[in-house]
Amino acid sequence: MRSNDSLARLADVIESRKPARGGDPEKSYVSRLLHKGPDAFLKKIGEEATEVVMAAKDVDHGADRSKLVYEVADLWFHSMVALAHYGLTPADVLAELERREGTSGIEEKALRKAAARATEEGGS
Image 1 (cartoon, rainbow, N blue to C red):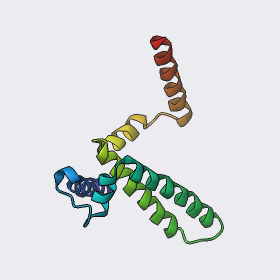
Image 2: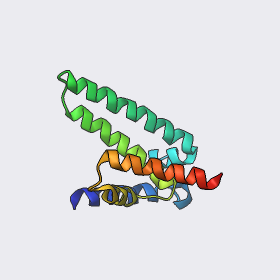
Image 3: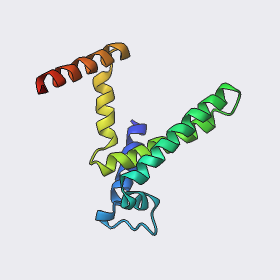
């Protein structure tokens, strides 16, 4: 699938920009974010999520939908930097989405709550 390939290629680039792999924070935005640590890229994720919401609201009022696509791309990108930092990949996210496939959102949320309760009760 083309989109999976694009995500995998981007993940490879992000991985190659890690400071531990020789990424230069002076030459690479990704390397700079990773070098600064989680606070830097997590802040960007928060900013980008807000920009997605604002772009969607603008689309509701007649703005060009491409602005929403642009902002979601930024959000995905910065989320992928976070995944790389924590040793995860887009494939891990896709696997989770596939696991949820065919399960209603309401059902899935109820299952997560039940699992959390079971964990809390078992840990008491």
